[in-house]
Length: 282
Ligand SMILES: Nc1ncnc2c1ncn2[C@@H]1O[C@H](COP(=O)(O)OP(=O)(O)OP(=O)(O)O)[C@@H](O)[C@H]1O
Ligand SMILES: O=P(O)(O)OC[C@H]1O[C@H](OP(=O)(O)OP(=O)(O)O)[C@H](O)[C@@H]1O
Ligand SMILES: [Mg+2]
Image 1 (cartoon, rainbow, N blue to C red):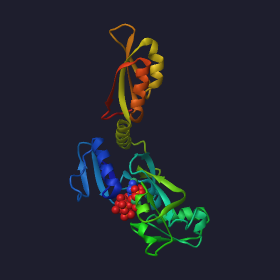
Image 2 (image 1 turned 90 degrees about the vertical axis):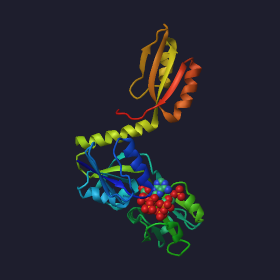
Image 3 (image 1 turned 180 degrees about the vertical axis):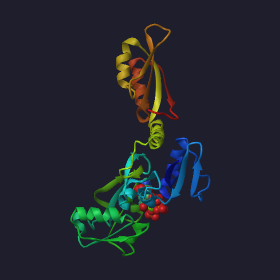
């Protein structure tokens, strides 16, 4: 039975459960449940603190985990990212009162408050900076006003939390993060059960990013039309009863679907339809 760690709280937990549900896995009904077995899919899910997940996976008792790339790196655990999942996207950045610092080079002798001590200490060391790091569990934005630190390093998504605290980012982003699937470093990723799990999640990612497009066009326009809708491998082209016309079917990125429909229409294609993809295996 495949044993999988899933975030039990915070920004990762809802979207992770939603993605697993879309991939056909049973998920817990109550937020207090700590583990459930999905007998149909032969999987056991453990609901753990996102920060602890890489550590559990590195110990080898759990096969796979879902966590944030920043949390994985911060933990220093012996685990590696095997699939990015596209949600809980954020950057990790320094911030301070306006003008207090312009880059990491200004941090010598300063105090930096953060919940991600591992990432910050390494970044400072890599840049040859001698600064102290204070660990706080959360709500780090308040640390400057309350005199705990001159600088913070924290997760930034929209920037609202920083703005509300009168702070501004400075310097280059320390890292970019998103939810990722992790596995113990060096463990066999080719294991069939692991591969099946990854294929299911990849199927959800594809279903979320692509739509199916169908249209009819004249044979003379086919090459130009197909250039607009190359599909993943190659589009399906079928003859129509009306001679000189073909039906074309291809997957297209959902974000570009409306523009592609306009371009196909201008080319003379008609009966242009898009439909959602619910699941797929590439
Ligand atoms: N506002 C946000 N937008 C996108 N991702 C976020 C946001 N806040 C946190 N994350 C991501 O969520 C993960 C942090 O997990 P964490 O458990 O700390 O979530 P949280 O929402 O901060 O909950 P908690 O209340 O436990 O601190 C990290 O990978 C981080 O990059
Ligand atoms: O740029 P924004 O869109 O404002 O998002 C970033 C904020 O979201 C997270 O906080 P969270 O709500 O998880 O609180 P925490 O600080 O207690 O973790 C993160 O720690 C930032 O504070
Ligand atoms: Mg948090």
